Structure formats: C-alpha cells, structure tokens
Image 1: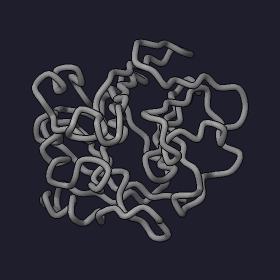
Image 2: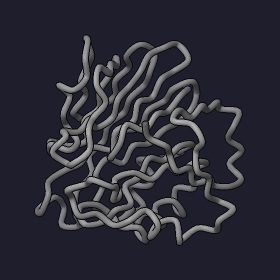
Image 3: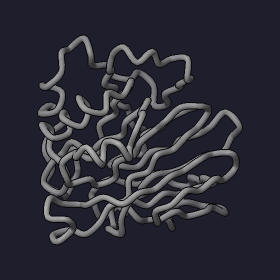
Length: 216
C-alpha cells in the first residue's frame, strides 16, 4: 500500500488493487492549497469543520464516509467510531470520528482532530495499529505530550504526525519540533519521497518509527 500526505490531516492511501482513500480534505482557507484534480474511491471525514470536510475537492465518483460504523468498499475495510474533539466530551468543539482502515493487511488509524486523552476503553476500541496518523499541533487537538502518550500506549509500528504548524498556515498550531523532541533521533526518519510504500511484512512490532512525510 502507498501513503501520500496532501497536507494538514489529509492523506491519500492506495491499496495494491488500486482502491484509494483520501482522509479529511481541506479548504484553502487554512492558508495552504489542496492538490488539484485529485481523485479517490473513498473519502473519510472526521468532523464537519472546513479544514477537514472539503469532499468537493475530490474529483470523480467517490463514496463519502462521515459516520460511525463498518464499511467495505472495493475490498478495503473502514471502521469509524466516535470520539471527542476536546476534553469536555464535545462541549467545546463537538465530536470526532476515528477511522481504522485495513489495506493490504496493514492496519492504519487516522485519529482526525482527536482532543480527548486516551482512555483504556478508547485504546481497546482502536486496537492493533501498524500506522498511526496523529495530530500533534495542540490548540484544537491533543498536544505533543498527549500525542506521545497515545504512541506509548498504542505502540504502533509507524507514527506519521499531522495537523501541525506549516508555512502559510492561518490556524495557530504548535511546531512539529515539540513532538519530535520527545523521541530519540534514531527513531525519526524524514521521508525522501512524497509517496511512502508499506507492506505488512515491514512490521515486526518491536519498535516504533516516526516518519515525517514530504509534501509536493
């Protein structure tokens, strides 16, 4: 399977069969452009905020998933379950859908704009994770320290941070360095290419690697 970071919390995941998913497409109001003429079979929306729900940016026929439940489209399994965008059970920013996606035998978890701490119940719902896509910029989501707690508890093979400050951003988010400082340098890898390829045989469950995606 292949992962490409489109910016913010948006990724394009492509299975070896060609079935593709785009997560949380965003509106340019955040200050950076969304890729032109990009298509996918499935679009997942974690919550209805303009920087996460711009499904109209995705061209062609697609199935939009913006609800909890289990779905199977083109052989790809998607499971959405409810969480909160803040620490007050949604009183401040509402609810957030976490998506577990299974592609080519790889378990990917996209946490959306998760804002609550990781409880034992939530950890059990998330279950086994090979690749964790996690917000680290704080302000509107969990911060760097809280994100590290998710990593330590879930023990994914690969962590890909998202939703952090970038050049041109209008939202006020924390810098990526605040998250990276919590890891040993040997655990961090900066991707040389914009597309990352993974196979289920890549994961041994013995260590966690943080990969910083490169964006076009």
